[in-house]
Image (cartoon, rainbow, N blue to C red; front, side, top):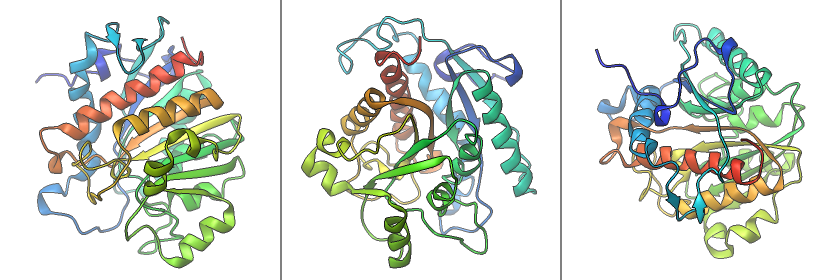
Length: 311
C-alpha cells in the first residue's frame, strides 16, 4: 500500500515528543457527534480532508523556492522554515470526551515544543479542544473566517460541536477578543446568537463589507493582541475556490482577500495557530478546494516568515 504523502513532502515527525520544527502540520479528523443533512455520498464528510489536502499539496512541493508573484519573491522570504508533518491524530469516535482530551493534549505538546500548530480538520468543532490548549499561552484573539456565526450554546444537546466553537471560545478566559469575517446569508445564527456574540464584543464583518471596504480598512477593526489564532471554515471562502463544502454560499472571501488578511494579521502580531476545517472531498470539484486550501496554508506560513515570526 502506498503511504499517504506528507504535506508538501515535509519530513515526518512521530511521536510529537520528538518535534523540532517551526511549523507542525497535524491532521485532526474530528466529527461532531450529531446529525446533519448532507448528501449520502458525503457521509464520510470531513474525515478524509487531511489526506486530501496532503495529496494535493504535493503539486507545490518542488516549487517552494521559485519566484512567487503573490509574495513578490521567495514564499518564505529566503528563510529556512522548518515544516514537519506530524501525521493524523488517532481518535476514538465512540468517546467524544476522549477525542476532545486527546486533541487538547496533542496541541499542548506542539506548543511546548515551540512550534506553530497548523491543523487540517475535521469539522469546525475542531477548534474547541485546540483552543483549550492555549490556557497558558494567552491572551489571544481568535479570528474566524466563516459564513456562519457558530455561536449556538448547544445543538442536539451537545455543546462542543461545529455550531458552537465561537461560543465556547468566548467562554475561555485566555481568549480576550474575537473577530468573525465573511458572515453572510441565512443560517448564520438566530437573533439570540447574534445578540450573544455582539454582547461578548465580537467584531463581526459581513462578507459584503469586506468586498466593499477592502482588507486594509477591515483590518483597522482587528483587536490588538499579543497573539492571533486563525480558524477557517471552508464555507467562509467563495464557492469559486471552495466548492467542496457542506453549505456553499455565494459571495464569500476570495483568494487574495484571504491571503491579504493573514498577511495583515501577521504584521500586527504573532500568529499562534491556524486550523483549516470543513473541506468535504466527496463534494469537491476537480479537487479545487483541497488544492487551494493547501496553497492558502502555504501562504499563511509565508506570511509568518515574511513578518519574521518563523525561520
